[in-house]
Structure formats: C-alpha cells, structure tokens
Image (cartoon, one colour):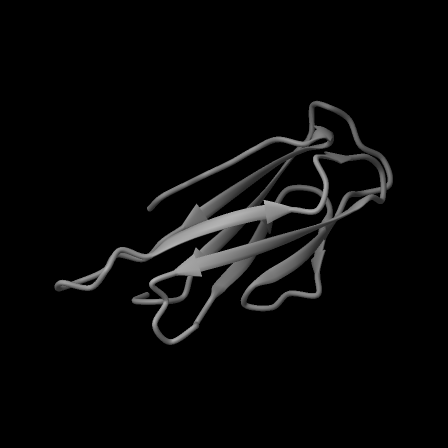
Amino acid sequence: MLRRGFALAGLGILVSVGIAGCGGKAKSISVALTASATTVDGTDAVTLTATVTHDKDSDGVTWTLSGPGALSGQSTTSVTYTAPAATSSTQTATITATSKADS
C-alpha cells in the first residue's frame, strides 16, 4: 500500500493514500492528493481532492478518518475535513484515501 502524507499547522493532519494491488499486466494505479489549505485551526475546514490515474472504471477512492474532527461531503474524488473547536499542535488526524479499483 502506497502512503503519502503531509501535516498542516495547528492540528496536524496526516493524509495517506491506499492503493489496492493490481494483478496481471494492468497499469499501476496512482492517487495524487491536493488540499485547499495548508493550515488548520479550530473549526477550520479543508477540502481534499483525490486524482486517481489508471482507474479505468472511474471508481475513485473511499475516505476514512482516524483522530479528532469530522469528514463531510464525501464523494469518490473529494472530502471536507473539519477540525474540532479546540486544537493543539500535539493532535493528529489521519485521513486515508483508498483506491476502490482492484480492491
């Protein structure tokens, strides 16, 4: 499983990417993530967008959150993360985007 991550100031957010294994001679699937902001404080919202290449059926990704905050507006290509009202630099939220293709 490929994992990519970055942290946002205030509440630390780790964004990871999960990619299902591909069998046969299929092209490797890759997932690129972009975020609408690079910092997050109490109740701030960040939109994350996933671009999946070699996703022949356009299945997209599923999103999961581990840690404080909430996900909303989930689709197969984007999600909105909202930080909790009280945040600190010692908190970490992990948002995982996992490719649905070949899973």
